[in-house]
Amino acid sequence: MTEAPTKVRVLEALKRIKSPGSGADIVAEGLVSEIVINQGKVYFAISVDPARARELEALRKEAEQAVAEVPGVAGVTVTLTADRAPSAGNGRGAAAPQGSPFARPGAARDARHRPGGVPGVAKIIAVASGKGGVGKSTVAANLALALKERGLRVGILDADIYGPSMPRLLGLKGQPQQVGDKLAPLEAYGVKAMSMGLLVDEETPMIWRGPMVMSALSQMLKDVAWGELDVLVVDMPPGTGDAQLTMAQQVPLAGAVIVSTPQDLALIDARKGLNMFRKVNVPVLGLVENMSSFVCPHCGERSDIFGHGGARSEAERLGVPFLGEVPLLPEIRATSDEGRPVVATAPKSPAASAFREIAARAVAALEEGKGQVRPAPRIVMES
Image 1 (tube, rainbow, N blue to C red):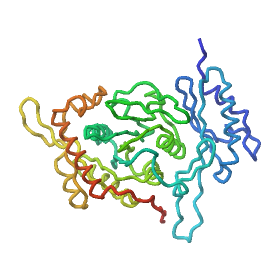
Image 2 (cartoon, rainbow, N blue to C red):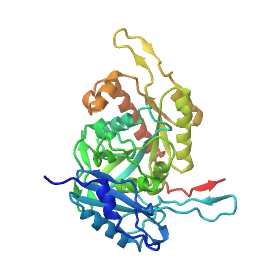
Image 3 (cartoon, rainbow, N blue to C red):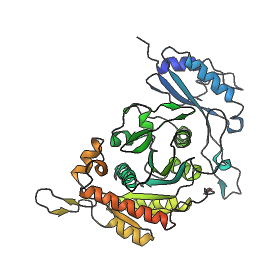
Image 4 (cartoon, rainbow, N blue to C red):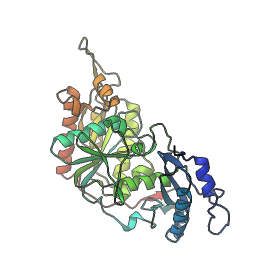
């Protein structure tokens, strides 16, 4: 039986690699990211000076070879990540880098010098929320399936590196296979899908810094064999951080769908998410009110557990489309947990109808020009 590799043995192998300039090993220098091992495959990153990323490709290959020799290792993926220092400013603020601060194996890459979308993908839509717990991933999965029902070729990218949900929501199992220099996405219900949850065990925490997250997100966008797609739905992590900026700068987003529950607390954060996309020049296709109301299956009485109509009012106030309401129904929770999304498995249900209406309005917003592809923004950090 083949011996399984361990983090300890991987680190011991990496201690043989010397850091350029200091003479100390790269582990002692703190240059090695969190190491992830899944079914014999090892993933990690090495932090390097961004100015030297290209010439340090030899260091990456040396580390890759050292780990490949560890007993039980079936494959190694090593990424060079390059943290950029802030530019010199005029005292009022400094220009932030316009590309994610990473370098993929083989070369230093800067998104400022390679604008454009994902080959073969016509439009990319981000599904986002200002906070977690509002059912964003469930909305993203069912939106993708509702778009598929409209005859579109659809893919979905789970961009939540720390908490990927799409494998569970779509009932996906197994690992993506290598196709040339790209990974082949898995498919569920006619939709192509990629997620960090397909590359690591469901219970493995991703203890990665921002540059590693942005590197992984970039690779899942552009190093996946998506083929020809009309729409790629991206399930964003909650908040307004690195992943959102990486998406806005790496690819021309056709638009963003903001998901919220009706109560004021959630709407405060949804407003922040909406304004963030506006600041980075991404059209907002509209707001979705999830968990809008609950109708008792026994007596038929309606209860507005989280309030009702808050997202609609907020959309009117902010001047963006309101895409629709998704009721709070046990069947949505049950089918999501079972990997059987309600649009695909209960197509005649009120929940499926709600998602179809949202998809129709999102498509209408795209066709009206709200989803017009715009260039990546120039982001300036102000003090």
